[in-house]
Length: 168
Image (tube, rainbow, N blue to C red; front, top):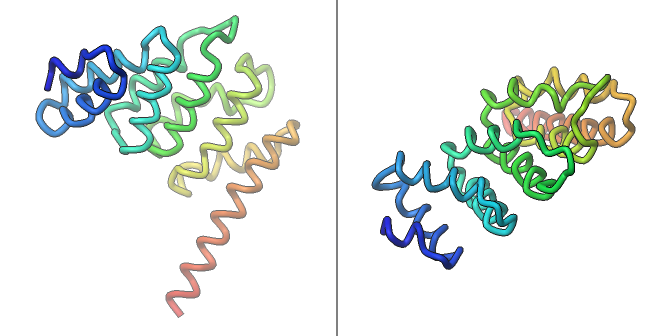
């Protein structure tokens, strides 16, 4: 199985990495991080998709590391957006402090698309951990950020109403 994790065919490699998590999580986490950081954007995006789809929590650290790397020419823009969305699907509240630079309104050096993806991804996080960031986004000068936060806030309110109705 470990040899398959190094296979040239991307599908075989990702399937092997996914299967290895049951037997050898440290080795598979290393292989997953390697795939996330692959130079080929298709490989990286597929590995990031695997993390988000299968809720592989060991992928949080490599995703955050990928986002921390400087990308001034935005050559990895698509990969970075996938990483931000995958973090939202994983919804690990411990990741939010590391994403703080994307939630700043003034003097943010982060690309606008990434900031918007970060605010949109808040919908997956637990309500208590995302609340201050959603409230900050609702006060943003950026109309798209305000709209994304309004959708997250409205979704949370709808879930709360549904919970109240089932308890009646």
